[in-house]
Image 1 (cartoon, rainbow, N blue to C red):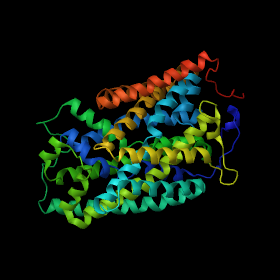
Image 2 (image 1 turned 60 degrees about the vertical axis):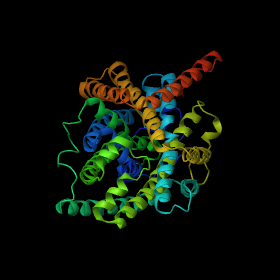
Image 3 (image 1 turned 90 degrees about the vertical axis):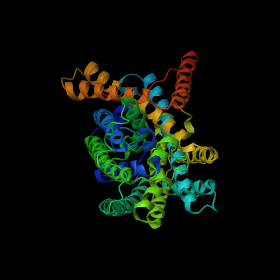
Image 4 (image 1 turned 120 degrees about the horizontal axis):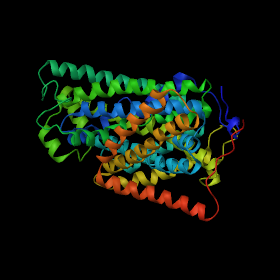
Length: 455
């Protein structure tokens, strides 16, 4: 098995994670019930064709997962797309890819805490959203501080709980449909000829892909994987495949039962409660409360727990290469975790999460920015596969190293083009700042470099 010493690093993190741990980590990050929290927004944008939006989303992510798997084999190190673009193409490109995905990784914990706080506030209105956010951040920071094994144990328990709630919803939803509570034709969630346009479904897919973000975070645990590097890539593909089936099935059932369809499409889901209202319509208020509580726990504890883990590893990798402040590279001597990076993510999550909780559409705004950052970085990932394997290594595997990355790149371009315009502007400014940082580094004689690979 390749070791990070071959690339000029020391093994500082603890190698303790198995294939199952990695796949569960990815599933928890994606959240098996992720559509609960953003169902209303995807429903509104897609004009009810939620299942189709998720199918397009998984097609885009499937090719991205294949590219991740290829690069994880070549460079089994923490840092995700930052490492892959940096070593597959060039160090400055790696910095830019890392800068792009920082918009995803740094903002996603705040988004998760905000969704969770909103869900809890929906049935305990006496407790403000910001109080829930602070409580979630405090719990997760303690768990992550105690080490990656503690995180793995907690995520296993939470995954079982999420799957149980999902099963309950699907059974109750199936019974409701059998009783004639359906509000639309059986195939409407997949295709509605009265409102279908490619721009509509790609715009909805640009939001739906938020649910799939997380399989890629498995790559940030490369230095804590105890098995062959190929298992890392396989765990990404496996986690994505399982999540895709769960997402399509649950959104299909929910879309058939959604009450007030026309109003939701016209006005959007301003309260963020569309799924919980649908669950209550299908099975009673108890099911609405259960799905809201499950969403809060899944997003506020489980998903945000692993999001903080992934983000801290990305900050650690970039700081280790002196492309971010060096204090972020400090590893706790006992718990073997990037301790300062973990606390930094917690601070950002509280600050941004509380601020966005005061905005009318804070969830939608954060979701759009997170997706823009991820999609931009994934585009560079596909380019890195082609450059590293086809150009540098002279690979003859045309499918894996040229065709698949090209298809993934094309689909992602279509998704990015149809994203929220405000997110495109803000994300564009963020990328421009990244280019400025690189320019300043060159001007100061500090060109981004990576440790020399040992032959």
